[in-house]
Image (tube, rainbow, N blue to C red; front, side):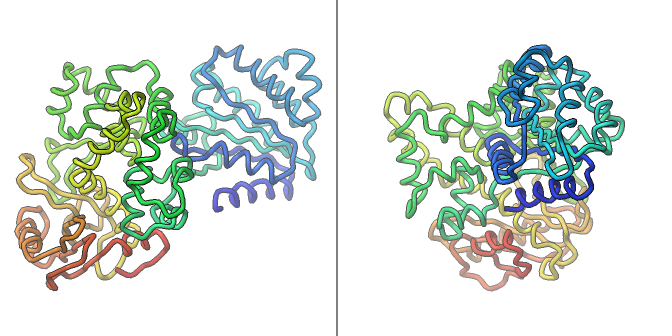
Length: 466
């Protein structure tokens, strides 16, 4: 596992140099960060303290840390069991005092943003302590699920700037999902749409199961992680923000433009704008504009970032009472009825991410980035637009269409629509490469690039060809 290797390398550096390491590990909720750190500690055999902040007052958090130290295999445990450690500085200093080059001490502080909420001076406290402790064989790991806040820890002007080494724990890629669940490419992509690569959800999948058998079984149990993880994640991210939750529910239900979200959520413009900013800052929702030479800001769309949360908001959250009443079969039928249209849209960001993964590639011209393009009235929507610049595509190197139909190939009518769409994408000339993505093959041979499910999955295995 790449993440475990990275942590082992940092520990090896502490042992080699005798100097401390201050690490930041971030990743979405339920992606397996805590399990990774516990596995790392267990395999290392080193003395360690694992503490998880819980949004308690600052004094209580310090006392809970003392309890974690008291329960740890460190020598400081005896002192911690006897009474207060005084301060965070004093507690870390005591732990550093027993660390040696041969036997370092590992300290993990999970949910670090919660600790900062309780004690706004926590970053400065760590900065002051680390000026001394960085010369001791101590490995301190700050862990958090609030991606934006964890990333901000190492930005210019913040107390810990330049002191942290960062690592991101991602969900399973679609290739990892395919391998772990034993699924063919198309089925793996559709599983990714539902479980979002979350390891805990992937672990629920039985050998030889298809998506519908998986859903039928999990929807029989109101305590299934498939049902409860979405609510738990939102309770952690937005614990008391009902207005922002309403906005997220509107986006999750399929509303993509500002006015439609406002109407469905039933709130004032100023309130809606603040809620959208919160969701964007927390990386729960993506704010999208057309990717072309002249992107129109008034054509902004909003999309739930995480595939699992997108599925949960669309289907599970509104119908949890059905599962609780033992009628998961009714919910399953609702999912089946809307599956084709939902899947068609939900697969698009995964496909774009996969294509971007294989760029640069001469089959796609000079493109390095992939987006989509649409007009404000939605009369024209182009699924794939490729360009060389992250901000806008000028010129457009390629355009493409995604047809994720069960049994119908990408046909001449689809090709004609793509060619017609090319005339409505700013920056796309007649020389723009035409790309097709199809679940069920092709009945036309006039595309420049044809991609199928295997190509999309293999992009995450380092395959560079189209």
